[in-house]
Length: 98
Image 1 (tube, rainbow, N blue to C red):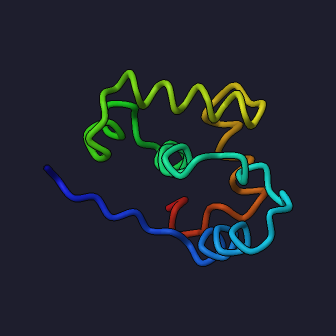
Image 2 (image 1 turned 180 degrees about the horizontal axis):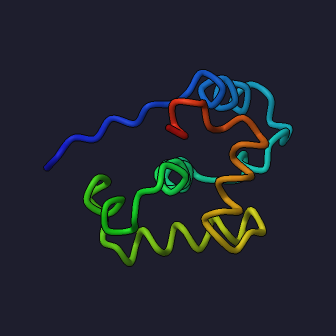
């Protein structure tokens, strides 16, 4: 089984830590599960469903299910909207966009 390390920017790490301490929602991403957050980050880096599937050892159908749920929770309809939302809320650092 391939190993996959997910890099979290300091901003994301701080948001996740604050979420544990303070249960008030300050970011639309607070409603996402850990797996949805992983899928979201990979989508914003331009990975395709099959690539995400391979890296997370999930079926493409499961990845699409996570994608659909996170789009629904965030009230968005496209990968572009997701990326813009992530940028607006500091979920992506400059290295992620290169």
